[in-house]
Length: 84
Image 1: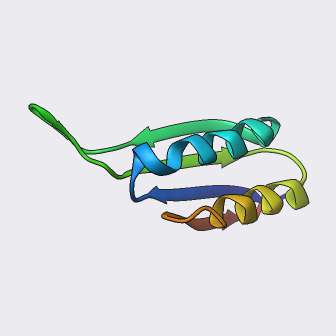
Image 2 (image 1 turned 180 degrees about the vertical axis):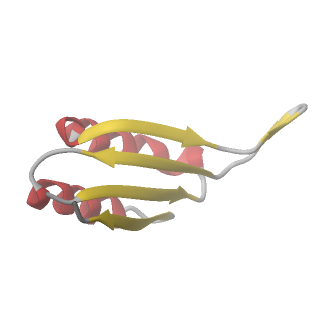
């Protein structure tokens, strides 16, 4: 069984996150770990961010989730696959 990690770059969090969150909720059973990163400085918060997803379960469901995320304008997906 492969281990699939998805890296998701969100260019404008306030615009894209509602649609992204909807997809992540729909495929929530395929997400074991979710880590969100964005730049924060005193008095400012970056408009973009990165999500890292450790996936779990049926590969076809994971690939469908990846496809749905990649369809969102301003959201870009990279995948790492570790063969066991």
